[in-house]
Length: 561
Image (cartoon, rainbow, N blue to C red; front, side):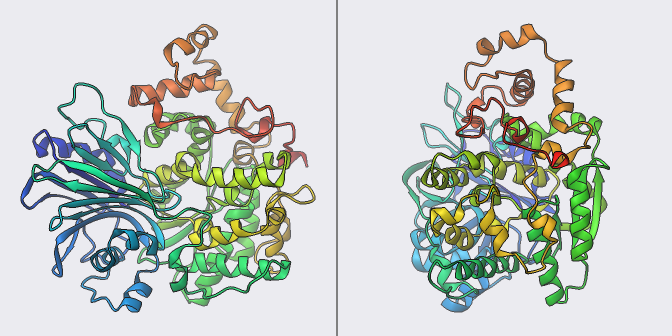
Protein backbone atom coordinates (compact mmCIF):
# COMPACT_ATOMS: atom_id res chain seq x y z
CA UNK A 1 0.00 0.00 0.00
CA UNK A 2 1.49 3.26 -1.15
CA UNK A 3 0.48 6.71 -2.29
CA UNK A 4 1.04 7.61 -5.94
CA UNK A 5 0.83 11.06 -7.52
CA UNK A 6 1.81 12.39 -10.93
CA UNK A 7 1.45 15.55 -12.96
CA UNK A 8 1.86 15.99 -16.71
CA UNK A 9 1.89 19.42 -18.40
CA UNK A 10 1.83 21.56 -15.26
CA UNK A 11 0.81 25.19 -15.73
CA UNK A 12 2.53 26.13 -12.48
CA UNK A 13 5.97 25.71 -10.91
CA UNK A 14 6.32 22.04 -9.93
CA UNK A 15 7.79 22.89 -6.54
CA UNK A 16 4.44 24.54 -5.72
CA UNK A 17 2.31 21.76 -7.19
CA UNK A 18 4.24 19.03 -5.36
CA UNK A 19 2.95 20.21 -2.00
CA UNK A 20 -0.42 18.71 -3.02
CA UNK A 21 1.14 15.25 -2.94
CA UNK A 22 1.87 15.62 0.77
CA UNK A 23 -1.85 15.30 1.49
CA UNK A 24 -1.56 11.52 0.98
CA UNK A 25 1.62 11.06 3.05
CA UNK A 26 -0.30 8.77 5.43
CA UNK A 27 -0.44 6.11 2.69
CA UNK A 28 3.33 5.62 2.69
CA UNK A 29 4.98 6.35 6.03
CA UNK A 30 8.34 4.68 5.22
CA UNK A 31 9.76 7.02 2.55
CA UNK A 32 8.81 9.56 -0.09
CA UNK A 33 10.24 10.89 -3.33
CA UNK A 34 9.52 13.53 -5.96
CA UNK A 35 11.16 13.10 -9.34
CA UNK A 36 11.02 15.23 -12.47
CA UNK A 37 10.86 13.55 -15.87
CA UNK A 38 13.92 13.96 -18.13
CA UNK A 39 13.25 16.34 -21.06
CA UNK A 40 9.74 17.11 -19.75
CA UNK A 41 10.33 19.82 -17.18
CA UNK A 42 6.64 20.27 -16.36
CA UNK A 43 6.06 16.57 -15.61
CA UNK A 44 6.67 15.01 -12.23
CA UNK A 45 6.06 11.88 -10.12
CA UNK A 46 5.43 11.79 -6.37
CA UNK A 47 5.53 8.63 -4.28
CA UNK A 48 4.89 7.79 -0.62
CA UNK A 49 6.12 4.31 0.21
CA UNK A 50 4.97 1.59 2.55
CA UNK A 51 7.74 -0.96 2.11
CA UNK A 52 6.38 -4.50 1.72
CA UNK A 53 8.90 -6.00 -0.75
CA UNK A 54 12.57 -5.25 -1.64
CA UNK A 55 13.63 -2.66 0.92
CA UNK A 56 16.66 -1.70 -1.21
CA UNK A 57 15.31 -1.33 -4.75
CA UNK A 58 11.58 -0.88 -4.24
CA UNK A 59 11.47 2.91 -4.31
CA UNK A 60 9.45 4.58 -7.07
CA UNK A 61 9.09 5.77 -9.73
CA UNK A 62 10.60 2.41 -10.63
CA UNK A 63 13.19 2.52 -13.42
CA UNK A 64 15.63 -0.17 -14.53
CA UNK A 65 18.68 -0.06 -16.81
CA UNK A 66 17.12 -2.34 -19.40
CA UNK A 67 14.28 0.13 -20.03
CA UNK A 68 15.64 3.63 -19.27
CA UNK A 69 12.65 5.19 -21.07
CA UNK A 70 10.03 3.59 -18.78
CA UNK A 71 8.84 5.12 -15.51
CA UNK A 72 6.43 3.24 -13.25
CA UNK A 73 4.56 4.52 -10.23
CA UNK A 74 2.13 2.01 -8.78
CA UNK A 75 0.23 1.14 -5.63
CA UNK A 76 -0.65 -2.48 -4.91
CA UNK A 77 0.61 -6.02 -5.06
CA UNK A 78 1.11 -8.30 -8.09
CA UNK A 79 0.76 -11.78 -6.63
CA UNK A 80 1.84 -13.73 -9.72
CA UNK A 81 4.98 -11.75 -10.57
CA UNK A 82 7.36 -14.65 -9.83
CA UNK A 83 5.34 -17.13 -11.90
CA UNK A 84 5.20 -14.72 -14.85
CA UNK A 85 8.89 -13.93 -14.54
CA UNK A 86 9.70 -17.63 -14.65
CA UNK A 87 7.27 -18.47 -17.46
CA UNK A 88 8.44 -15.69 -19.79
CA UNK A 89 12.09 -15.91 -18.63
CA UNK A 90 12.37 -12.20 -17.92
CA UNK A 91 15.77 -10.91 -16.78
CA UNK A 92 14.85 -9.33 -13.46
CA UNK A 93 16.94 -6.51 -11.96
CA UNK A 94 15.13 -6.00 -8.63
CA UNK A 95 13.06 -8.13 -6.26
CA UNK A 96 9.95 -5.97 -6.56
CA UNK A 97 6.65 -7.26 -7.86
CA UNK A 98 6.12 -4.07 -9.90
CA UNK A 99 9.05 -4.76 -12.21
CA UNK A 100 6.95 -7.42 -13.96
CA UNK A 101 4.86 -4.61 -15.47
CA UNK A 102 7.86 -3.11 -17.25
CA UNK A 103 8.81 -6.43 -18.83
CA UNK A 104 5.24 -7.33 -19.83
CA UNK A 105 4.64 -3.90 -21.33
CA UNK A 106 7.91 -3.91 -23.27
CA UNK A 107 7.28 -7.36 -24.75
CA UNK A 108 3.51 -7.35 -25.28
CA UNK A 109 2.10 -3.83 -24.87
CA UNK A 110 -0.48 -2.49 -22.43
CA UNK A 111 -3.42 -4.49 -23.86
CA UNK A 112 -1.75 -7.79 -22.93
CA UNK A 113 0.06 -6.57 -19.82
CA UNK A 114 -2.97 -5.45 -17.83
CA UNK A 115 -5.04 -8.69 -18.00
CA UNK A 116 -2.03 -10.82 -16.99
CA UNK A 117 -1.64 -9.05 -13.64
CA UNK A 118 -3.06 -11.10 -10.77
CA UNK A 119 -3.36 -8.67 -7.92
CA UNK A 120 -4.68 -5.34 -6.74
CA UNK A 121 -3.17 -2.25 -8.29
CA UNK A 122 -3.37 1.28 -9.59
CA UNK A 123 -0.55 2.32 -11.89
CA UNK A 124 0.89 5.22 -13.86
CA UNK A 125 3.29 4.06 -16.57
CA UNK A 126 5.26 6.54 -18.68
CA UNK A 127 7.02 5.61 -21.93
CA UNK A 128 9.15 8.59 -22.96
CA UNK A 129 10.51 6.77 -26.07
CA UNK A 130 7.03 6.50 -27.58
CA UNK A 131 5.63 9.49 -25.70
CA UNK A 132 2.78 7.60 -24.04
CA UNK A 133 1.20 7.71 -20.58
CA UNK A 134 -0.84 4.75 -19.31
CA UNK A 135 -3.18 4.51 -16.33
CA UNK A 136 -4.70 1.27 -15.05
CA UNK A 137 -6.68 -0.04 -12.08
CA UNK A 138 -7.59 -3.51 -10.80
CA UNK A 139 -10.93 -5.21 -11.46
CA UNK A 140 -12.70 -4.14 -8.26
CA UNK A 141 -10.86 -0.90 -7.65
CA UNK A 142 -9.37 -2.28 -4.43
CA UNK A 143 -6.56 0.22 -4.94
CA UNK A 144 -7.81 3.76 -5.47
CA UNK A 145 -6.85 6.24 -8.17
CA UNK A 146 -8.29 9.62 -9.19
CA UNK A 147 -7.55 11.76 -12.20
CA UNK A 148 -8.01 15.37 -13.22
CA UNK A 149 -7.77 16.24 -16.93
CA UNK A 150 -8.15 19.83 -18.14
CA UNK A 151 -9.35 20.91 -21.57
CA UNK A 152 -5.82 22.03 -22.45
CA UNK A 153 -4.24 18.67 -21.59
CA UNK A 154 -2.97 18.96 -18.02
CA UNK A 155 -3.24 15.53 -16.39
CA UNK A 156 -2.98 15.03 -12.63
CA UNK A 157 -3.31 11.60 -10.98
CA UNK A 158 -3.40 10.63 -7.32
CA UNK A 159 -4.32 7.72 -5.03
CA UNK A 160 -6.81 9.95 -3.23
CA UNK A 161 -8.81 12.90 -4.52
CA UNK A 162 -7.53 15.16 -1.75
CA UNK A 163 -4.13 15.24 -3.47
CA UNK A 164 -5.67 16.93 -6.53
CA UNK A 165 -8.04 19.54 -5.10
CA UNK A 166 -5.37 22.26 -4.85
CA UNK A 167 -3.66 21.64 -8.19
CA UNK A 168 -3.43 24.98 -10.01
CA UNK A 169 -4.29 25.22 -13.70
CA UNK A 170 -5.13 27.81 -16.34
CA UNK A 171 -8.80 26.86 -16.69
CA UNK A 172 -11.35 29.51 -15.68
CA UNK A 173 -13.82 26.92 -14.35
CA UNK A 174 -13.23 24.20 -11.71
CA UNK A 175 -12.01 20.92 -13.21
CA UNK A 176 -13.70 17.62 -12.33
CA UNK A 177 -11.77 15.10 -10.25
CA UNK A 178 -13.06 11.61 -11.04
CA UNK A 179 -12.29 8.10 -9.80
CA UNK A 180 -10.50 6.05 -12.44
CA UNK A 181 -12.84 3.21 -13.51
CA UNK A 182 -11.87 -0.24 -12.13
CA UNK A 183 -10.87 -2.93 -14.60
CA UNK A 184 -9.81 -0.35 -17.21
CA UNK A 185 -6.66 1.12 -18.70
CA UNK A 186 -6.34 4.47 -20.45
CA UNK A 187 -3.78 5.57 -23.03
CA UNK A 188 -2.62 9.16 -23.47
CA UNK A 189 -0.38 10.71 -26.10
CA UNK A 190 2.32 12.82 -24.42
CA UNK A 191 3.07 15.98 -26.38
CA UNK A 192 6.45 17.70 -26.44
CA UNK A 193 4.89 20.42 -24.29
CA UNK A 194 4.23 17.86 -21.55
CA UNK A 195 0.47 18.09 -22.08
CA UNK A 196 -1.50 14.94 -22.87
CA UNK A 197 -4.42 13.80 -25.00
CA UNK A 198 -6.54 10.76 -24.14
CA UNK A 199 -6.64 8.39 -27.11
CA UNK A 200 -8.08 5.17 -25.64
CA UNK A 201 -10.03 3.98 -22.60
CA UNK A 202 -10.69 0.25 -22.54
CA UNK A 203 -11.88 -2.44 -20.12
CA UNK A 204 -9.36 -5.26 -19.66
CA UNK A 205 -11.33 -7.40 -17.21
CA UNK A 206 -14.85 -7.76 -15.87
CA UNK A 207 -15.66 -9.57 -12.63
CA UNK A 208 -17.77 -12.22 -14.39
CA UNK A 209 -14.98 -13.27 -16.78
CA UNK A 210 -12.33 -15.84 -15.93
CA UNK A 211 -9.09 -13.84 -15.77
CA UNK A 212 -6.46 -14.40 -18.46
CA UNK A 213 -3.85 -14.94 -15.76
CA UNK A 214 -5.71 -18.05 -14.49
CA UNK A 215 -3.60 -20.31 -16.73
CA UNK A 216 -0.50 -19.32 -14.72
CA UNK A 217 -2.25 -19.79 -11.36
CA UNK A 218 -0.79 -22.18 -8.80
CA UNK A 219 -4.20 -23.79 -8.14
CA UNK A 220 -4.10 -25.39 -11.59
CA UNK A 221 -7.16 -26.66 -13.44
CA UNK A 222 -10.39 -27.21 -11.55
CA UNK A 223 -12.77 -30.16 -11.75
CA UNK A 224 -15.63 -29.44 -14.14
CA UNK A 225 -19.37 -29.61 -13.56
CA UNK A 226 -21.91 -28.20 -11.12
CA UNK A 227 -22.60 -31.15 -8.87
CA UNK A 228 -22.55 -29.88 -5.25
CA UNK A 229 -19.47 -31.77 -4.08
CA UNK A 230 -17.37 -30.60 -7.04
CA UNK A 231 -18.49 -27.00 -6.58
CA UNK A 232 -17.81 -26.97 -2.85
CA UNK A 233 -14.38 -28.52 -3.36
CA UNK A 234 -13.50 -25.89 -5.98
CA UNK A 235 -14.64 -23.10 -3.66
CA UNK A 236 -12.34 -24.39 -0.91
CA UNK A 237 -9.39 -24.84 -3.31
CA UNK A 238 -9.69 -21.35 -4.80
CA UNK A 239 -10.32 -19.62 -1.47
CA UNK A 240 -7.30 -21.21 0.18
CA UNK A 241 -5.24 -20.43 -2.89
CA UNK A 242 -6.31 -16.77 -2.68
CA UNK A 243 -5.25 -16.51 0.97
CA UNK A 244 -1.98 -18.35 0.28
CA UNK A 245 -0.77 -16.12 -2.55
CA UNK A 246 -1.81 -12.95 -0.74
CA UNK A 247 0.55 -13.76 2.13
CA UNK A 248 3.30 -12.31 -0.08
CA UNK A 249 5.48 -9.70 1.63
CA UNK A 250 8.22 -9.08 4.15
CA UNK A 251 6.15 -7.39 6.87
CA UNK A 252 4.16 -8.96 9.69
CA UNK A 253 0.72 -10.30 8.78
CA UNK A 254 -2.47 -9.80 10.80
CA UNK A 255 -6.21 -10.14 10.23
CA UNK A 256 -9.33 -8.19 11.11
CA UNK A 257 -11.76 -10.50 12.91
CA UNK A 258 -15.33 -9.39 13.55
CA UNK A 259 -16.58 -12.84 14.50
CA UNK A 260 -18.74 -13.01 11.40
CA UNK A 261 -18.49 -15.70 8.75
CA UNK A 262 -16.23 -13.91 6.26
CA UNK A 263 -13.47 -12.60 8.51
CA UNK A 264 -13.51 -15.88 10.47
CA UNK A 265 -12.91 -17.95 7.32
CA UNK A 266 -10.07 -15.64 6.30
CA UNK A 267 -8.45 -15.65 9.74
CA UNK A 268 -8.77 -19.42 10.17
CA UNK A 269 -7.29 -20.12 6.73
CA UNK A 270 -4.49 -17.67 7.38
CA UNK A 271 -3.57 -19.36 10.69
CA UNK A 272 -3.79 -22.81 9.06
CA UNK A 273 -1.39 -21.82 6.26
CA UNK A 274 0.94 -20.05 8.67
CA UNK A 275 1.31 -23.28 10.65
CA UNK A 276 1.90 -25.30 7.47
CA UNK A 277 4.56 -22.81 6.35
CA UNK A 278 6.07 -22.70 9.85
CA UNK A 279 5.80 -18.93 10.06
CA UNK A 280 8.09 -17.72 12.84
CA UNK A 281 5.43 -15.57 14.54
CA UNK A 282 1.76 -16.06 15.49
CA UNK A 283 -0.93 -14.46 13.34
CA UNK A 284 -2.44 -11.51 15.17
CA UNK A 285 -6.21 -11.01 14.93
CA UNK A 286 -8.01 -7.78 15.78
CA UNK A 287 -11.57 -7.13 16.91
CA UNK A 288 -13.25 -3.91 17.97
CA UNK A 289 -16.35 -3.54 20.08
CA UNK A 290 -17.88 -2.61 23.39
CA UNK A 291 -17.00 -5.05 26.16
CA UNK A 292 -20.31 -6.93 25.81
CA UNK A 293 -20.85 -6.53 22.06
CA UNK A 294 -21.93 -9.61 20.06
CA UNK A 295 -19.08 -9.19 17.54
CA UNK A 296 -16.39 -9.04 20.21
CA UNK A 297 -17.76 -12.17 21.91
CA UNK A 298 -17.91 -14.09 18.62
CA UNK A 299 -14.40 -12.96 17.65
CA UNK A 300 -13.09 -14.25 20.99
CA UNK A 301 -14.57 -17.69 20.28
CA UNK A 302 -12.99 -17.84 16.84
CA UNK A 303 -9.58 -16.62 18.04
CA UNK A 304 -9.53 -19.22 20.81
CA UNK A 305 -10.58 -21.94 18.36
CA UNK A 306 -7.95 -21.15 15.69
CA UNK A 307 -5.19 -20.17 18.14
CA UNK A 308 -4.43 -16.63 16.99
CA UNK A 309 -2.74 -13.89 19.01
CA UNK A 310 -5.95 -11.97 19.61
CA UNK A 311 -6.27 -8.24 20.32
CA UNK A 312 -9.54 -6.66 21.39
CA UNK A 313 -9.98 -2.91 20.99
CA UNK A 314 -12.58 -1.33 23.26
CA UNK A 315 -15.00 0.93 21.39
CA UNK A 316 -16.66 3.82 23.20
CA UNK A 317 -19.32 6.19 21.96
CA UNK A 318 -17.11 9.17 22.80
CA UNK A 319 -14.24 7.86 20.66
CA UNK A 320 -16.60 7.15 17.78
CA UNK A 321 -18.11 10.63 17.80
CA UNK A 322 -14.68 12.25 18.15
CA UNK A 323 -13.30 10.32 15.16
CA UNK A 324 -16.21 11.13 12.84
CA UNK A 325 -14.74 14.23 11.16
CA UNK A 326 -11.34 12.62 10.55
CA UNK A 327 -13.08 9.58 9.10
CA UNK A 328 -15.09 11.68 6.63
CA UNK A 329 -11.93 13.57 5.66
CA UNK A 330 -10.14 10.32 4.83
CA UNK A 331 -13.14 8.73 3.10
CA UNK A 332 -13.91 11.63 0.76
CA UNK A 333 -17.50 10.40 0.91
CA UNK A 334 -20.76 11.35 2.63
CA UNK A 335 -22.56 8.04 2.07
CA UNK A 336 -24.33 7.18 5.32
CA UNK A 337 -23.57 3.50 5.72
CA UNK A 338 -19.99 3.99 4.53
CA UNK A 339 -19.36 6.64 7.18
CA UNK A 340 -21.08 4.68 9.97
CA UNK A 341 -19.14 1.48 9.27
CA UNK A 342 -15.83 3.29 8.78
CA UNK A 343 -15.55 4.63 12.31
CA UNK A 344 -14.85 1.24 13.91
CA UNK A 345 -12.46 0.22 11.12
CA UNK A 346 -10.60 3.54 11.40
CA UNK A 347 -10.16 3.13 15.17
CA UNK A 348 -9.00 -0.50 14.97
CA UNK A 349 -6.50 0.45 12.24
CA UNK A 350 -5.20 3.21 14.50
CA UNK A 351 -4.68 0.65 17.26
CA UNK A 352 -2.86 -1.75 14.93
CA UNK A 353 -0.47 0.97 13.76
CA UNK A 354 0.25 2.32 17.24
CA UNK A 355 0.28 -0.82 19.38
CA UNK A 356 1.55 -3.66 17.13
CA UNK A 357 4.02 -4.38 14.35
CA UNK A 358 1.45 -5.97 11.98
CA UNK A 359 1.33 -4.08 8.68
CA UNK A 360 -0.22 -6.48 6.13
CA UNK A 361 -3.84 -6.84 7.24
CA UNK A 362 -6.27 -9.42 5.86
CA UNK A 363 -10.00 -8.74 5.77
CA UNK A 364 -13.27 -10.35 4.66
CA UNK A 365 -14.25 -7.48 2.35
CA UNK A 366 -16.20 -8.32 -0.80
CA UNK A 367 -17.89 -11.49 0.42
CA UNK A 368 -21.30 -9.89 1.05
CA UNK A 369 -21.40 -8.58 -2.51
CA UNK A 370 -20.07 -11.76 -4.08
CA UNK A 371 -22.10 -14.33 -2.14
CA UNK A 372 -25.39 -12.37 -1.80
CA UNK A 373 -24.78 -11.87 1.90
CA UNK A 374 -26.87 -8.78 2.52
CA UNK A 375 -30.13 -9.50 4.29
CA UNK A 376 -32.22 -7.82 1.60
CA UNK A 377 -31.29 -10.62 -0.84
CA UNK A 378 -33.97 -12.70 0.94
CA UNK A 379 -36.49 -10.37 -0.74
CA UNK A 380 -35.13 -10.64 -4.30
CA UNK A 381 -38.03 -10.97 -6.79
CA UNK A 382 -36.17 -13.68 -8.72
CA UNK A 383 -32.90 -15.59 -8.87
CA UNK A 384 -31.93 -13.53 -11.92
CA UNK A 385 -32.54 -10.25 -10.08
CA UNK A 386 -30.41 -11.44 -7.16
CA UNK A 387 -27.56 -12.53 -9.43
CA UNK A 388 -27.61 -9.24 -11.34
CA UNK A 389 -27.61 -7.21 -8.14
CA UNK A 390 -24.64 -9.16 -6.82
CA UNK A 391 -22.65 -8.11 -9.91
CA UNK A 392 -23.87 -4.51 -9.55
CA UNK A 393 -22.64 -4.40 -5.97
CA UNK A 394 -19.24 -5.77 -6.99
CA UNK A 395 -18.92 -3.16 -9.72
CA UNK A 396 -19.77 -0.42 -7.21
CA UNK A 397 -17.51 -1.71 -4.43
CA UNK A 398 -14.95 1.03 -5.10
CA UNK A 399 -17.56 3.66 -4.21
CA UNK A 400 -18.67 2.12 -0.91
CA UNK A 401 -17.25 -0.82 1.08
CA UNK A 402 -14.06 -1.01 -0.95
CA UNK A 403 -13.53 2.70 -0.43
CA UNK A 404 -14.13 2.30 3.32
CA UNK A 405 -11.70 -0.59 3.64
CA UNK A 406 -8.92 1.20 1.77
CA UNK A 407 -9.19 4.65 3.32
CA UNK A 408 -9.60 3.58 6.94
CA UNK A 409 -6.54 1.31 6.80
CA UNK A 410 -4.48 3.61 4.56
CA UNK A 411 -5.10 6.47 7.00
CA UNK A 412 -2.77 4.59 9.35
CA UNK A 413 -0.29 3.24 6.83
CA UNK A 414 -1.57 -0.36 6.67
CA UNK A 415 -1.66 -2.72 3.66
CA UNK A 416 -5.05 -4.39 3.16
CA UNK A 417 -5.48 -7.87 1.64
CA UNK A 418 -8.89 -9.06 0.43
CA UNK A 419 -8.93 -12.76 -0.63
CA UNK A 420 -12.68 -12.84 -1.36
CA UNK A 421 -11.96 -10.45 -4.24
CA UNK A 422 -9.38 -12.72 -5.80
CA UNK A 423 -10.14 -12.56 -9.54
CA UNK A 424 -10.28 -16.29 -10.09
CA UNK A 425 -12.23 -17.12 -6.95
CA UNK A 426 -14.83 -14.42 -7.62
CA UNK A 427 -15.20 -15.26 -11.32
CA UNK A 428 -15.72 -18.93 -10.48
CA UNK A 429 -18.34 -18.14 -7.83
CA UNK A 430 -20.21 -15.88 -10.26
CA UNK A 431 -20.13 -18.60 -12.93
CA UNK A 432 -22.18 -20.96 -10.76
CA UNK A 433 -25.91 -21.47 -11.42
CA UNK A 434 -28.06 -18.69 -9.96
CA UNK A 435 -29.97 -21.08 -7.70
CA UNK A 436 -26.74 -22.27 -6.05
CA UNK A 437 -25.70 -18.73 -5.10
CA UNK A 438 -29.04 -17.59 -3.67
CA UNK A 439 -30.03 -17.69 0.04
CA UNK A 440 -31.42 -21.08 1.03
CA UNK A 441 -33.65 -22.19 3.91
CA UNK A 442 -33.67 -18.60 5.19
CA UNK A 443 -29.85 -18.50 5.35
CA UNK A 444 -27.79 -16.05 3.30
CA UNK A 445 -24.41 -17.23 1.89
CA UNK A 446 -25.67 -20.80 2.19
CA UNK A 447 -23.31 -22.18 -0.47
CA UNK A 448 -20.21 -20.60 1.08
CA UNK A 449 -21.16 -21.92 4.52
CA UNK A 450 -21.96 -25.37 3.16
CA UNK A 451 -18.60 -25.54 1.37
CA UNK A 452 -16.85 -25.42 4.76
CA UNK A 453 -19.33 -27.64 6.63
CA UNK A 454 -17.60 -30.47 8.51
CA UNK A 455 -14.10 -29.06 7.85
CA UNK A 456 -13.58 -27.91 11.45
CA UNK A 457 -12.01 -24.70 10.19
CA UNK A 458 -14.18 -22.49 12.41
CA UNK A 459 -16.78 -23.29 15.09
CA UNK A 460 -20.15 -24.41 13.68
CA UNK A 461 -21.99 -21.65 15.55
CA UNK A 462 -19.86 -19.09 13.68
CA UNK A 463 -20.15 -20.91 10.35
CA UNK A 464 -23.93 -20.57 10.56
CA UNK A 465 -24.09 -17.22 12.38
CA UNK A 466 -26.43 -14.78 10.64
CA UNK A 467 -25.10 -11.53 9.27
CA UNK A 468 -25.02 -8.81 11.92
CA UNK A 469 -25.72 -5.14 11.20
CA UNK A 470 -22.37 -3.47 11.92
CA UNK A 471 -23.90 -0.98 14.37
CA UNK A 472 -25.43 -3.81 16.41
CA UNK A 473 -22.34 -6.02 16.36
CA UNK A 474 -19.94 -3.22 17.33
CA UNK A 475 -21.59 -1.92 20.50
CA UNK A 476 -23.25 -3.35 23.57
CA UNK A 477 -26.64 -4.97 23.65
CA UNK A 478 -28.00 -1.97 25.56
CA UNK A 479 -27.44 0.63 22.84
CA UNK A 480 -26.16 0.31 19.27
CA UNK A 481 -23.66 2.58 17.50
CA UNK A 482 -26.52 3.50 15.16
CA UNK A 483 -28.61 4.77 18.10
CA UNK A 484 -25.65 6.55 19.70
CA UNK A 485 -24.98 8.40 16.46
CA UNK A 486 -28.62 9.44 16.03
CA UNK A 487 -28.78 10.80 19.60
CA UNK A 488 -25.60 12.83 19.16
CA UNK A 489 -26.73 14.34 15.86
CA UNK A 490 -30.17 15.20 17.29
CA UNK A 491 -28.38 17.72 19.51
CA UNK A 492 -26.34 19.11 16.60
CA UNK A 493 -28.94 19.59 13.84
CA UNK A 494 -32.27 21.36 14.30
CA UNK A 495 -35.54 20.69 12.49
CA UNK A 496 -35.32 24.07 10.76
CA UNK A 497 -31.83 23.27 9.44
CA UNK A 498 -33.14 20.04 7.92
CA UNK A 499 -35.94 21.89 6.11
CA UNK A 500 -33.29 23.99 4.31
CA UNK A 501 -31.24 20.96 3.18
CA UNK A 502 -32.72 20.81 -0.34
CA UNK A 503 -31.77 24.42 -1.01
CA UNK A 504 -28.26 23.98 0.37
CA UNK A 505 -27.61 20.60 -1.25
CA UNK A 506 -29.77 20.00 -4.36
CA UNK A 507 -27.56 17.06 -5.42
CA UNK A 508 -28.10 13.94 -3.28
CA UNK A 509 -30.17 16.04 -0.87
CA UNK A 510 -29.89 14.73 2.73
CA UNK A 511 -33.31 13.65 4.04
CA UNK A 512 -32.30 13.02 7.66
CA UNK A 513 -30.45 14.97 10.32
CA UNK A 514 -27.66 12.41 10.23
CA UNK A 515 -27.32 12.82 6.46
CA UNK A 516 -27.19 16.60 6.78
CA UNK A 517 -24.64 16.47 9.60
CA UNK A 518 -22.32 14.19 7.61
CA UNK A 519 -22.80 16.24 4.42
CA UNK A 520 -21.86 19.46 6.21
CA UNK A 521 -18.59 17.93 7.41
CA UNK A 522 -17.87 16.64 3.89
CA UNK A 523 -18.55 20.05 2.30
CA UNK A 524 -16.30 21.71 4.88
CA UNK A 525 -13.34 19.68 3.58
CA UNK A 526 -14.39 19.21 -0.06
CA UNK A 527 -16.66 22.08 -1.11
CA UNK A 528 -18.36 21.58 -4.45
CA UNK A 529 -17.22 17.94 -4.80
CA UNK A 530 -20.58 16.28 -4.05
CA UNK A 531 -20.35 14.18 -7.26
CA UNK A 532 -17.69 12.01 -5.58
CA UNK A 533 -20.65 10.17 -4.00
CA UNK A 534 -22.85 9.50 -7.05
CA UNK A 535 -25.68 8.02 -4.97
CA UNK A 536 -26.37 6.60 -1.52
CA UNK A 537 -25.95 2.89 -0.83
CA UNK A 538 -29.41 1.49 -0.15
CA UNK A 539 -31.02 -1.98 0.08
CA UNK A 540 -33.18 -3.04 -2.87
CA UNK A 541 -36.66 -4.58 -3.27
CA UNK A 542 -37.94 -3.29 0.06
CA UNK A 543 -39.19 0.14 1.07
CA UNK A 544 -35.99 1.19 2.82
CA UNK A 545 -35.39 4.78 3.92
CA UNK A 546 -32.13 3.97 5.69
CA UNK A 547 -29.23 1.73 4.57
CA UNK A 548 -28.76 0.01 7.93
CA UNK A 549 -29.89 -3.59 8.14
CA UNK A 550 -31.21 -2.90 11.64
CA UNK A 551 -33.98 -0.70 10.16
CA UNK A 552 -35.32 -3.54 8.00
CA UNK A 553 -38.36 -5.52 9.11
CA UNK A 554 -36.65 -8.77 8.08
CA UNK A 555 -33.61 -8.15 10.33
CA UNK A 556 -33.24 -9.87 13.69
CA UNK A 557 -30.24 -8.77 15.78
CA UNK A 558 -28.05 -11.51 17.20
CA UNK A 559 -29.08 -10.63 20.73
CA UNK A 560 -32.76 -11.21 19.89
CA UNK A 561 -32.33 -14.61 18.26
